[in-house]
Image (cartoon, rainbow, N blue to C red; front, side):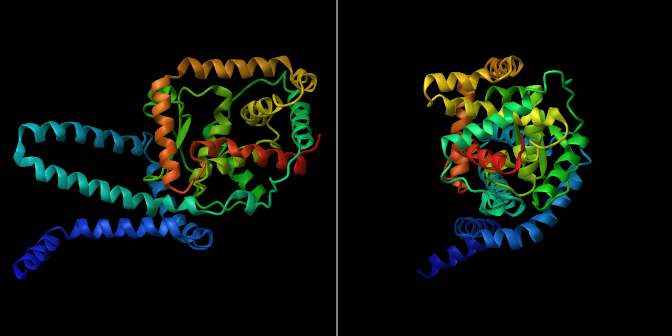
Length: 356
């Protein structure tokens, strides 16, 4: 027994860095599960994330390529060649496993420290006092009519996507208007290194927490660009919920003087109205659909066709399942369904603030 404890003590001493990182990870996972929105909002976001996020955004802002993509590319290369090396050179097996374990433990811990706790942030509807319960059919119709009234005057608009720097300025001004804190100063928007692969699985953009980077797909449907940029910039501001990121993107777009920005938000929300109205009687549904200008209908069809042509069913299914598991493991109980939950928030917001 004495020899056993002596050997165990020696084993722990030799591997103390792994036990230390594993213990830290377990503490962070438990804290992430048990944390309160108050801790995230009043301590983590303004103090920890504010400092870490700005430092990492400043550093990565000097580099045009995605550090997040490079990290994962190097990890994949290491996994492939490491596995081959283990098969042919058994003496490297322990070293390979130990190194891989070290990288995984460091990355997992850094995820929580650099951004992961943002999933515990209080919902935006509570922060902005948006009431989504008890919405009636007439509320959805009223919001739809306001959108149609605005979008009907956009047929002569020349579509011109703003530069990334201009979109960042619009976003910062919009957050101020919504009274949502700016925790990290946005510096650069990067194009995904593997845009072609990601568009096949339906990924339009993503936020890389390790280096605080905002990524946009290079194959994005052009008129989606402002909305997707605002969505990913919202993740950078410590918003974990996909629903809330979609809502912020819409809310700061729908009253912007540039019709291109408003139109981008409308294209993203109109399919939700169309699906909702299919539960209406046929004549009422037809009357609502007939209000949409032909050029808007053509844009919606063109947008759907574009993404269908780029999509790969297998890649899309795998990505959706993986994202669903990832979101649920971080406390987003609705998983990928969370993306569409902003519909009711938008209806409530339009009826409260947007004028005909």
